[in-house]
Every structure is written in C-alpha cells, then in structure tokens.
Amino acid sequence: MRALVGLALAVAGLVVVGGPAQAAGFNGYVDDTGSSPAAGLLHVKGWIYDLDDGSAPVPLHLYVGGTWNDPNAQFIDLGLANEPRPDVPSSYPGAGPNTGFDRTVEVAKFGNQPIYLYALNAVGPEGDPVLLINGTSVQIDSPNPGGDFTSASSSAPGQVSVTGFAFEYSAPDKTRVVVTTNDAYAGTLVADQRGPGFEDFPVMFNGTVPSPGGDVRVCVTAIDQGVGSDQSLGCKQVQVVAPPVPPVPPVVTPPPAEQPRITLALKAGRKKSRLRIDVGPDLEQSNYQLKIQRKAGKKWRTVKRTQTLGPRDRIRIDLRRGKYRVIVPAQHGLQGVRATARLRR
Picture 1: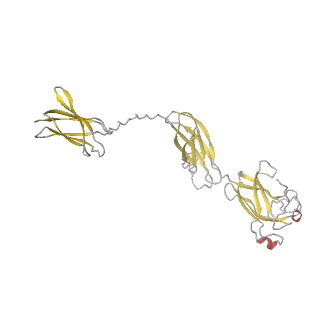
Picture 2 (picture 1 turned 90 degrees about the vertical axis):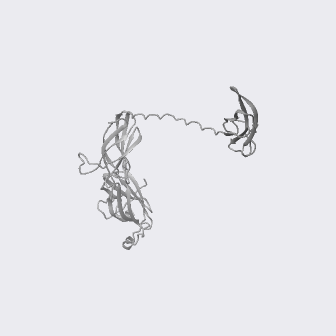
Picture 3 (picture 1 turned 120 degrees about the vertical axis):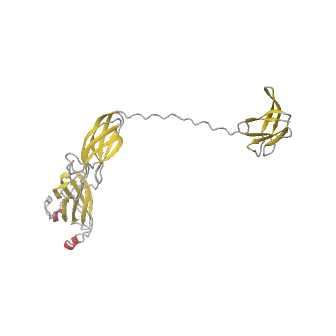
C-alpha cells in the first residue's frame, strides 16, 4: 500500500495522526462513518479535497475487519472522491465542485466489524498514515443462506430422504436446497415447512430424491438469492439398496418387407382353344418373359416360351385341348408367379 497522508475531519471517532488539517494537506467531512443498508453491504459517504489542488480527486481505501497492515482485513478500493458536491466550494473556496464520495460496496466479512477509511495524497508530498474513519464498529449481516443438514436415510430401494432447515435474511422467497448423491445432482427441495423448533418459521425441508445403490455420499447446498454465495450445509454417508433394474424389452425384429409380386390372369376361350394371358403390373418399356407348360399324366412339359407384347402386357395363344400352366419367373425386381387353366374344344 502506498503511503497514506493525514486528514482532519470534524466527526466523532476520527483520529488525526499527522497534525492539523492544513498541515495534513486535506480538508473534508464524513457524513456516514459506516452503516449497513442490507445484508452483505457497507455504506460510507462524505467529501474531501487536497489543499494543494482542490480539483484533484483524492483516492480512497477502505479496510473492513482491521487496519491497512492487518493481513486479515478485507481491502476495498473505493476509487476517487470525484462525485458532485456543489455545496462544498460555497463554504470552502479552495475546493472543486466534484469532491464527494458516496459508496455502497459488497463485503466478505460479517457480524460486528471495525472499518477503517484512508485518503491517499492526490497532489504534493506524501505524509504519515492518518485514519479518516478509525475502527467504527458496524453490524453487517451475512447475505449468504444458512441452515443445517439434519438427517439422511434410505427407506426404499433407490431413494434417499433428507431433512434440515435453511434460511436467508431479507430474501424474497423461501430458500431452495440442492441435493447431490455421489456428487451428482439428485433434486431440489424448498425450505418451506414448519416443525419442532420452527413452529413460527417455515424454514424446514423434508423430501426424497433418487439415489444410486451402495454407500452413497449425500450432500445438501443452500442456494443464495442475492449478493451472497451458495453455502454447503454438509454431507452424510447413507447405505442405499440399489434400485430395481427395469427389464430389458425383447428386441423385435420387423418382418422383411415383402417383395412386390407379378400378377397373372388366365382366361380360356369358349369356342376355340385359345388362352388369354394378362401379366401385371403393366410395363411401358419392357415385356415379361414366360413359359407355358401342358400337363401330361403327372408331369408338366414345356410347350412354349414366349413374352408379352406392348405396354398392356397381354397375349393370346392357340393351344390344343388340355390343362396348362403358365409360369412367369422373377424379373424386373418382382417375384415370379404361376397359374393354371383348362382348355376344352
């Protein structure tokens, strides 16, 4: 920290180390020597200027919980005292119009804390450290949620029940708590229940979350709603019976898609031994190859090989009396087909 210089201020609790204000090189006043407008916040307000140059903004350093050389104190750089204060030059002609400071800052120390405010020399030689606010005690409420993780148990396979309480001062909503099992998210509960010791304050949580089986580490964290941070409420080990494994459904293999088939229609002529053959589906560019067999005893003998003609895929063939079979083998990506007909003459 750079050397700090003196300031004489007309305020209770001010300690001047470097002599009178004129010798210290500053003039100023602290309107608010330290207050906490809300949990986790600290407010200071006033004005100050350097007698060597009334328009030169003065740097300000704030320490919470100890002096500038206390390693446990929290340091906050308040920046420059450069906010408009038109009332100051009317009483002190040497002051500039922008000499004010009005800061509300977040702090990390809570409870009854001493605060120390220093001004750094803006112009001219440096002097000895002088306190603007000398250890004024300020009560700062914690903005973080608090509470306790009371119990954890497993009453059913694959489940863990947790109880406890959680709260946050000045928070608009009930505090939420996140439950983890073996460091994995398991669920979120709301601390909105009443119980023994909390009949007038609904801050208890009691709920069940899913869990893996075995020796499970269950942890609960209270979720912050404002300027604070989430707070762990602790962890517990719980023996959990593994959840039942759901049955694996059988693999259903769909039947193969049926290959499209050729259609075949036979019609025998009434007066002549003529066989009318109609093959489908009709093709515009190709014909169907086919063969005609006649039954002789118990056997079929091929009597003709031919093909359909034209886009309608129809033909007529004169044959002698008998029983015939027409076979259209697989072709054009279609399954083959056969049919029989009897010719009488």
